[in-house]
Length: 564
Image (tube, rainbow, N blue to C red; front, side, top):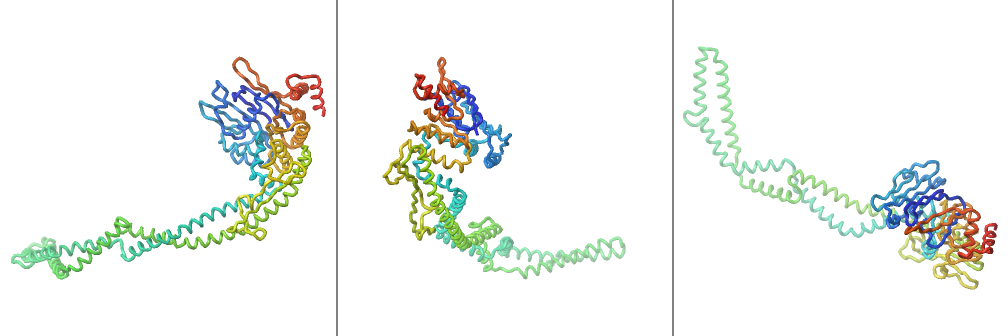
């Protein structure tokens, strides 16, 4: 329930604080006194968007605070899910609106977003504004009310989840099929690239190896000339290196016979001689192996051209080309799996459709069964609101869908996120008239009473503890108004109910009666609210009955209403 509201610098409210009680709380006052402003402030506490135009003239910041008593375990769970710590079951909501700084939103002093507050507010208060009964003029809302009455929420939620999954999977499958031609073209192109790389039989060491071979073949003649000159210098010419080194060795060996200290030097000279002989042999072997092969050189050049062509397409070197080859192979594998994925998805959709069909039929049958009792309950409530000859019904419409997958009563039927087909409330206010769509024939006053009747019926199913009616008395008066008040009083036996009204018949039934007043001092206007004592209630009811001129008769009539 709402325990307290404090408002400061909001519209024409300068500073206001009011405590509320359980039961039926009625707000009355002259038109323009500020009753709706209080509702607007309460809407801020429930997550409405802030408007700096609502800040009182001459001020920079407006404040609205409310203390809510929360007992419902589900609501407590939702609040705690958002990280808000509860204190003894009380929730303090603060909104600050500023045109010079940041707007603030706090729950028990924990900052939250407005969207979070709105989600929590939906669990705290059910607010019906002056025109909210007109939601009945939208047939799509009728299914929500019937499901609430028939307690079909669980099966409807399950159907909605599965329907959403089915829609998502269907779009995915449609996209996969639409892109099939594109997939085939891409697969063909990737296969060509893979074949081109594989046919080249690349290895990371090959390029450097054949480049070296190419360089050798290109300079074979120069190499041979150098080898031959080297051999000639070592062995062929008179006074060659080997010949001279051999002579040096003989001289040193003869000296060795005289001085053994030359042994190491002689051994090193002898080793140098033998090493040069091996060098000569290596040069001869290399010379014999060296060949001038233009055909091989051409083969190498062609191979290098092939490698360079692949490098331009797939990477800067053979290593990158081979990595690209693995990526292409992976993409091909993924594309190849698309066909299998399509088959898997198609099978999953078939299974999902079986589940949806069962849920949809179960939900439709439950609604039709609930509609019979629902219509009778609405008629009973409306009769108590002086609509004695009214008839109420629910019409179900199941449009066929030749491409659908739900077979309902031997015909494929259209499904939406709320179930099979549509439903609409029917209404007949006068005897002898056939049932027709409520949205087409009900007057404003009739709609108000229908909405109140529905709220009375759904009172037990609706777990929201606070209900607010802003001028539910629109279009009614006299005895009907009294019966509306009695109905509100009945709803208030299990909920905290607020009602803004201009009718004394309703105000006289209040558990707590508040008067909203407006006064002007100088150039400023202020709005205030106060709880009325008994005699003040008598005067207020008399004013509401007879206007500003209050007579003894109107006062006596007011006392009779309160006594009743």
